[in-house]
Image (tube, rainbow, N blue to C red; front, side, top):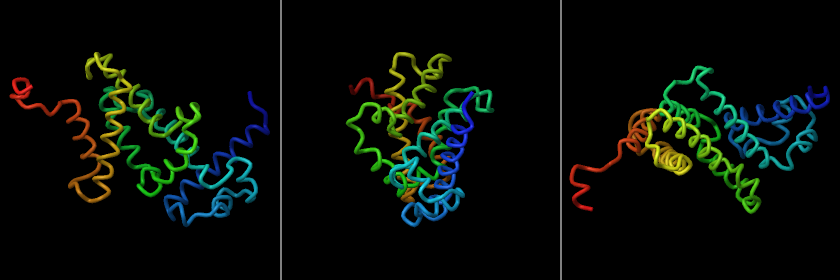
Length: 205
């Protein structure tokens, strides 16, 4: 059980994050002020600084919150596919659709966490690493049911998938790829799993 005071603090924190995410999506990061966020959250401007030192500091909190939501969405009991590989594809599509994946906001987010990487706890909370760990968990489950080779480090494979995801996301945002983004991500995962070797690769090596 939590106290009424603590519950109100959590509710205010949540309102601030929801308001910030909506405003960043609608107006962009630069065009949104702290006062805009507090007005939308229906709290006093000074309340914002009880939770975040600067506007930039809300970005890592938003990333952590959205990744927790993503983890919940990947649970089969929440309607996610039974196949772990299908859940990996679902995860990439959900991340791509998130406002925080917009290139301009993503750059702001990564800039906000970079100064804290000398702190191991902050390093573990880095959004890119957190996504790799989330994907690694799905890889581990895929290995358990035979969808992915079990002689590979799940975190290594999760990192490969994350790297390919961000690269393909930039390709799509730059207009260098045809079709829909979900199709592009689906093909990327399939290519990683199928491999790119031709019939002569073993002989050439």
